[in-house]
Length: 120
Image (cartoon, rainbow, N blue to C red; front, top):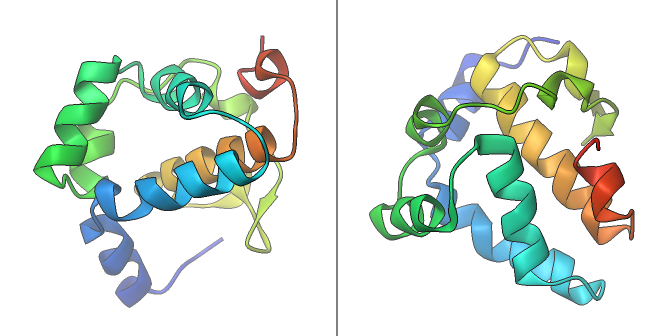
């Protein structure tokens, strides 16, 4: 799936810290915890909580956030649709990683067990 260059550039520059509060709100509204959200983020990125906090404070853009991450080897098992687009069909690597994270947050918020969300 191709995304227009203007949208890609905007997503690449968007700070992780700008989206993070929305993730927290989404999962907490559905009865999940910030700790579970961090578990999902650290699973995908192989960061620890200190790394996540550093990226939040530094307002790291998604492009640099994922460049610094070591993606979990099971990340390609994340499949499905986010915003009408199949995540496995996204061609841009940064956009695909952002959508992987979106998909995991969606699954967590929908009540999937943490084991299933983390592809255990």
